[in-house]
Amino acid sequence: MSKNNSDKLFESFSSGGLTLKNRTVMAPMTRTFSPDYIPTKEVAEYYRRRAEGNVGLIITEGTFISHKAANGYERVPAIYGEKALAGWKHVVDEVHAAGGKIAPQLWHVGSVRKEGTGPDKSVPAYSPSGLFKPGAENGVAMSQEDINEVVASFAQAAVDSKNIGFDAIEVHGAHGYLVDQFFWEGSNQRTDSYGGSLENRTRFAVEIVEAIRVAVGEDFPIIFRFSQWKQQDYNAKLCQTPEELKTFLALLSNAGVDIFHASTRRFWLPEFEGSDLNLAGWTKKLTNKAVITVGSVGLDSDFTGEGSKDLSGTSNPTSIDGLLERLNNEEFDLVAIGRALLVDAQWVNKIRDKKENEIAPFNKEALMKLS
Image (cartoon, rainbow, N blue to C red; front, side, top):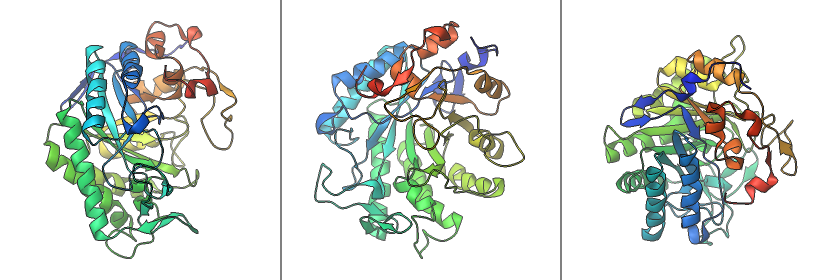
């Protein structure tokens, strides 16, 4: 049972046009349960159960925008087209009926895409320089016209999301997907205004956020997820120092980001030497914007990478005392829970009611079912 006071976790939160009943967030997690790229009634029920479980804000699995090369996986949902938007409208309605709030994660996979993936299986991957990682090519380098098309697709997805009732949107700028591929020198070898300096490599994301802000107006919240690590390189860092991180975040903040979602694999690890602050803590300190922390919350091992257990293993529930201490110290504002919420839709209520001993462990089976 947690010894630290969890009251702050259950305080309300407001940012612009978004008001939440508590500080808990469902982290976006890819779930390949949308045949023909359309979220089903079962997907709606899945999200509704988390809203019924008292989650403050649900951020959906990555949902791909309308650019021809945005998707990288079969049976993931789209965020364009009449049928897919109708499916998402049903999801939104179910979550709202259960008293929850929900935001879609807008996604373009970039060079992670493999040719042969739908909807149009003939389309190659698109990325800043045609690179998946240093020395590994995949797809084609984006022209200015390609860049403009992707920016417009993000903006349209945000407008459509607002129109069907979502409470905010999140731009996926993390984990080695397209936006992050522009950030990372390992995949961005451009020599134009989108490559080279950190400021130039952030330009693509800035244009996306600015276009979304114009399209949705001033009061509709924009969340931006970023990470230092990449699926291509767990040890990669966009910003080697707090000063570089400050430059990076200021560009996005000025473009219109309301809430930063600082993705780490282990929330308890310090980001820079000489301070115990994690990436979310530094983001809060440097921007004074609202920040979400995330990374193996409530579990004793991370999902992938060195030191973690593979998918055939089990991650067991563990104390969140360290998390609560950081939250009570106002190092960040919101807490995203991933796998723990996949396996137990009542995780938030069990934490609130001091019933941690009733929380189930996470295992491979949790990934295989839409429960």
